[in-house]
Length: 121
Image (cartoon, rainbow, N blue to C red):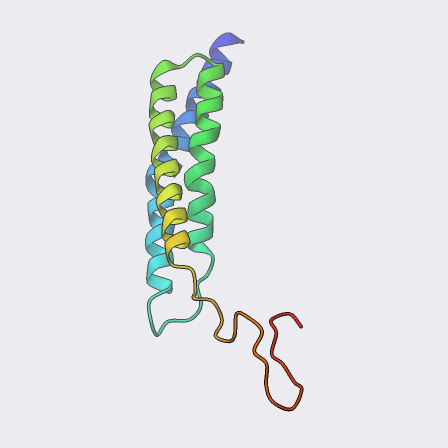
């Protein structure tokens, strides 16, 4: 029974690694090509790439660490760290490229005739 479990876990980890090395880059490339100017709206490939790019290494770290497979733990740990770096860079890019505040008065402006333009009022 122990050998069967070892083979199943090794196969699962190898499939996860292959998915992370092959499927995720394919989805990123597909998402970039479908989001080019002039093409139709994206097909969700980048969303799937993001979920698989973080989820496969996370699952791989958990499985490899609990089954004490040191090499796989290192591989998936590095992959998870890379996914975290990409996510942090994307988050930082989103924070620095927020749209400007809407135009208009940011304080009360009294007008002749009794009206005013107060934000929220």
